[in-house]
Image (cartoon, rainbow, N blue to C red; front, side, top):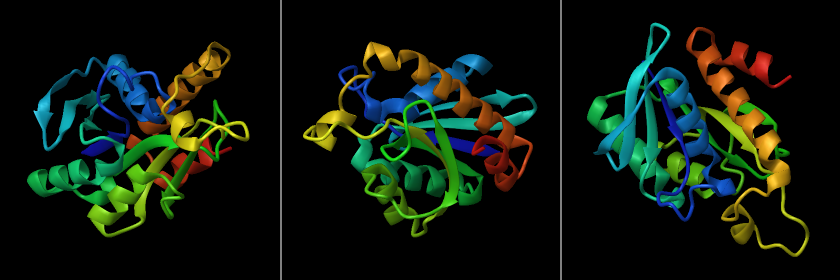
Length: 186
């Protein structure tokens, strides 16, 4: 069973912000496969279902971004799942809008949600789908930028990126993560 963790912040005021592309991707994946999110468990909203014949669990931490690791750890401990079956989906300033980058290890790169997951799991080795949000213009504070909504001109690349990330997650179910990276990092 694979479990896919999308990072974001709970609440309607954050819903369409750059920091919430992880949630956006999970919503799109859930919609594709008729998966609905149930009540909160393990500090997260959880949706269970199937993608093809593969059982998947979609997880949206409700802890706010900086404490995402608490929900990951709570889920791991309660359900005794393996870290190597997890994929974390999140926003990445160093990737341009519309592009995704897959990795299976690395530092947090300044991302507080990833920093929290590394802290709570004790490792930097886990599968990731990084969704590009580009860097802000000079003089625009990063914290304000990631909590701002996508402008209209980025709507099409955003939608394309979300679909591409969903495709990558689906492909990873039947392939190694190395094969998935080779296909989707091109």
